[in-house]
Amino acid sequence: MIEVTHHQTPRWRDVVLEQIRIVALSLRREAMVLAVVVGIVTIIIAIDIIGGRAGTWFDSDEWTGVCFLSFFFPFAVWRGEKRFGPAFLWTLPVDRRRLALTKVFAGWVWLIAVGAVFIFWHKTLAILSGVAGPRTTPLLSLTGATAMYLLGSALVLGLRHPLRLLLGTGGVFFLLGTLNEAIGRTGGTSRMLAWLGIGTLATSSGLSSAVEQAVLTIWRTYPHLVPATAVVLWICAGVIALWAAASRHRERRRR
Amino acid sequence: MLELHDVSHVYANGTRALDHVTLSIPRGMYGLLGPNGAGKSTLMRAVATLQTPTEGTIRFGEIDVVAEPEKLRRTLGYLPQDFGVYPRVSAYEMLDHMAVLKGVVSPADRKTTVETLLNQTNLWSVRRKALAGFSGGMRQRFGIAQALIGNPELIIVDEPTAGLDPEERNRFLNLLAEIGENVVVILSTHIVEDVSDLCPRMAVLAGGRVQLEGAPQQLIESTRGRIWMKVIDRGELARYRDQYQILSTRLFAGRTVVHVLSDGEPGNGFSSVQAGLEDVYFSTLAQSRRAA
Image (tube, rainbow over all chains, first blue to last red; front, top):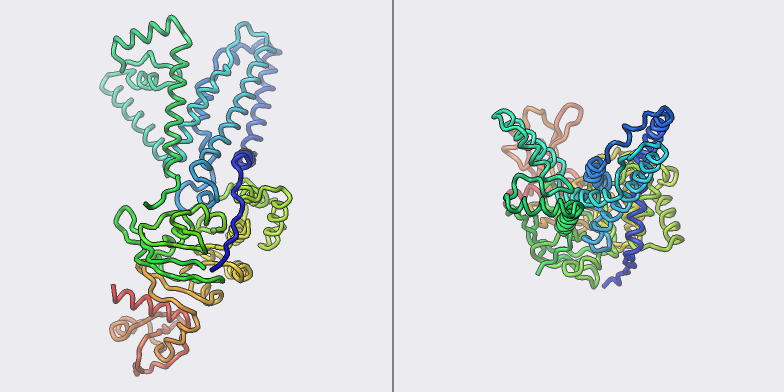
């Protein structure tokens, strides 16, 4: 009988560090493009600061934009990696579910790093602009970004064709909205979207009036509690969805 | 040695892709031939621990592959038919990445491993080039390089020469021949020449079952005196199909060369020819279709 040589199973610390490194390498070009764009925008803002016209750059936070991009970031992280079918990834001598989750974690590390740099950049320019009461992206938006990243990762990891689901869902919303408009029920789609929006629960027309009253009371008394609760709930939902998605790739043994 | 005993696999939709496959695969190159849908890829995925067969056992040395797949993966190299790569990452960086994930964590060992493999697969000159810019042949060579990381004892290569030009195919087969001497290498393909050129042992899979197994030379010998050839006009082909068991047809100078299987001389201008592995393969497939 052949004596089989067993090779060392990699340590998880090495796997995590390696996944962080390879995600950075695979997104190198996108990072350079982003750096060029940010450089150009910085120059434009600087010109506006000098000209005393910088107010428009700091009159809104970019929370929605950050969350939106965070949702789609996993598509970039997993680009080129086969998640289903015969793939290198699943023949490696490491636990499959954990391997998938380390890759998600690696992407999250870079998302937060880039997000933090963006927030710092925005705040620095706001300070330099001299604009009174500037609105910039808060650090708290990274929690929403995390929630959306987890949900996006669950989609990419758990479905063979995630883009089809997204396009289909978008199409359904569009059709519903169009139908609503056509039969004279305006605002229905926007109310639904607001209910689903990150950081708000209280404005939903789907909640009962009693619950809505309770939420509005809490909102007025503790104005940060409701969005914080919402973000925590969304993060929990993201973690659960991600775990379920990663579990699709777990080792299955015949009993 | 890789031992498969009574391996079957039924997919959720009821398709029986493997039906009681039993094989003993020794060290060296082993060819697995079969048409599309024969179950080759299902069998390769089962051995590569990508899916668990619904029945049967697979053992590699002392490893029960079904019960302890992670143990086999520590000594496995796998080159699937279609593999994804990070398009913007260079060959060197990708191999380095795979080496870490396969347990080669020492930077010095990794450097040696990666550089050796790049040289062995003739990719050293393009080691800094992004994988997206690789030709088909270069990608396949890269694929075998990553499969060789960690000195695996079992290498599975699934349809490796599909889509390669003759020069690339030749280069790739020479590379496989080099590595196939001391480890178990299973070459799954529907290209008969790949098996006849490389493999001292082979099996033919069709309909999820092993139809034939043995050394190619011995299998060819078993058809000695039973393969007959004739050159006919294309318009006569339908008539000949009704009369004879045609194994293969090919065009030559505008006419059709037919090979038929017959225990006795068929007459009618047929001449006996030296059988090739292709004849063995086609006759096996024909028999399996009749039996089905």
